[in-house]
Length: 420
Image (cartoon, rainbow, N blue to C red; front, side):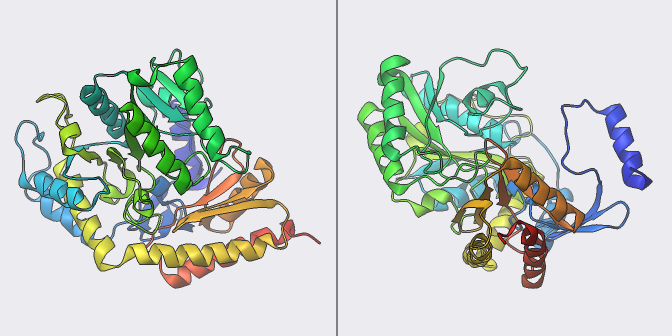
């Protein structure tokens, strides 16, 4: 590569370890709503959203103003040393909307993995049990505990040695691979008979829509029966909503689509519109299980991120982003369904609001489409165990004309794959 991007890439290769891989070989200089501009002046329509972090778009004016206003007051005190009202107020707002049965309480952290780890800590403290059950193809983070919980080896676990104990993986319902609800529940019973007694299990953790796993949506029947199974054995149910939260699925939380309510919910990503903030919410009596000092972190609930999150909730409500998520998602699904009619390479389309994915028969096809899209000014992400799924994580604030332009780009790319 030549030019500024090439120079930066060389500097990156010289200064950073290879484990910090990058999708793009260009370097962003400016971003606004759904547009990215690199150091050489090229632009892309952003359908990646910082991996589901930017449901409210890049640099939303309300969020920028909230951060600037807080910046003029203080940037950090460590909440557990010197608390501040904005943290308490955000917890109150989250508690009022989170789909938890009864009174809820919330604690803030910095990353999604940190939220998941703290949910495990809360669950173990509340139940006095150690076992954690998650699901195949799940993604919960890159720390050692969350790596153990993640249901994919490469690149997340490979080369990193033994994982923490007391974590088992059940099967997640997936009609594409023939895993029925009955199969998934049977795998849980197998764990109870072969690996760990149910009375030793603290929590079952699942994504209501698997993110890295390919945007597979949990069937309502599965969640209902999972809730019943957990209640039967005194096991807590934790919903990992790090990727699904904050209007992405057409509701504030994906669990709002179900009658079932979890005991704990983790959230991060779009919670603070690009600022590092995560949270664990749950039933008050469960959240109160750890003693004083048992939860926290130096940067947990950073004031700038808290201010951004207040603005995010305002924007979602005032701009009706849940409804817009449904409308944009429906438009995208209609487009993909029309393309599928003449393209046997497309094997499935999955969507809940604007959490949309299209699966291809081969990973090479998905990756080729991703590369061609980038060459034409559209940034896409892949996912799934085989990397054969393209997921769409555009800002929900994207202008209609720009959204249509992105679909036009995608239409031109898909034409050569249509059946003759």
